[in-house]
Length: 436
Image 1 (cartoon, rainbow, N blue to C red):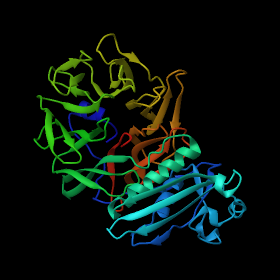
Image 2 (image 1 turned 90 degrees about the vertical axis):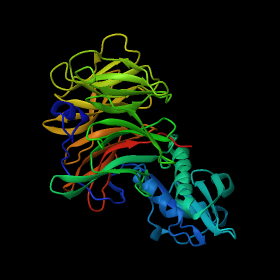
Image 3 (image 1 turned 60 degrees about the vertical axis):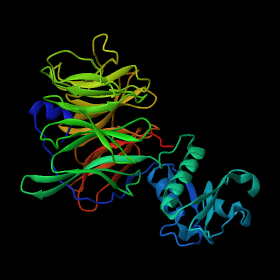
Image 4 (image 1 turned 135 degrees about the horizontal axis):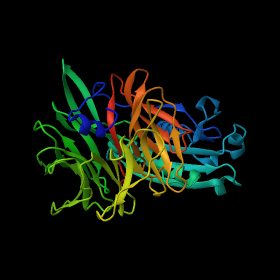
């Protein structure tokens, strides 16, 4: 499925590939030249954690494409504390930074995880310790603690807040027979681990959208044999029906303050963009015409909406006031097909699905210059872009080695990785906001 837009054209859902329920696994396909070299010293393990934090931290940083993690076989020893060794020994290996740590099991079933980040470009060992923390966690929360450490390291070195503690939502489609499938809405860690099923249905599920506080998902379900929009609490799995109008109920998108949803309804005929006050369910029409208008997306300050429309012939991206006042303004002019647009967090760029020579890629538009840059070089079509909350990466689905998979590409196009399901595919992804 290249775009929700095609659903409104054909009034049906066409899924090009099916998937099996599986954990996603990252695979870096293209890193960044000049990535920061860092040594992750294996943590001392005085406990029984199944996977040590150093392994998770190394994977996080390596898969970001912005770090080159030194092979641990090059390390002459595994000290637990930076003050036990000379920083010059790591400098000789070419590292700019080094991470030390240890895990201790406590009597109450908890674990104490400690770490130090050493800036090898600084002076003595004591001065070079730029970060050090101690955490007490359960075994179930040890992975989350490791991701948090990765976030701290990433932010110190790059100056950008890390996204390793964020979550992904996506839909898995499993064939169950000729022309039949099972649809599963899942949420996983940012690296694909700890998948959790929120909903399973024999009818299509699509368009998951995170609330700004990360506690709820809005999505479209066809479990009643027609489209309806639900909002589901992630922690409790409780959910409520939000819209069930005749015709199309589609493409929900939360406003930045979490009080409103932009959505697509055809209750008056053609698909048009509406904004709903979630508490009162009061609707405001944003577009009022006979074109196909779909896929709304909010600006970071909540003042504007992007949407896809065929009003110029082929699907293109338009921008309009979120109040519904004024006329829509077309912003995409490169390519004969642009859809699924989303602002970057700074509001200066727009990521979108962009067709080039018949192939769908992820494009990013500079709103000041009007320049479109095509990101990545995956061999298959790419669609459904979702921007990371720090703006560094764009999550999307694509075809990789003959399978429909989730993938990520950096906003400058220089870093690419894929998250293939072991036995199939996942699709229609959404990246969570920062979680606290």
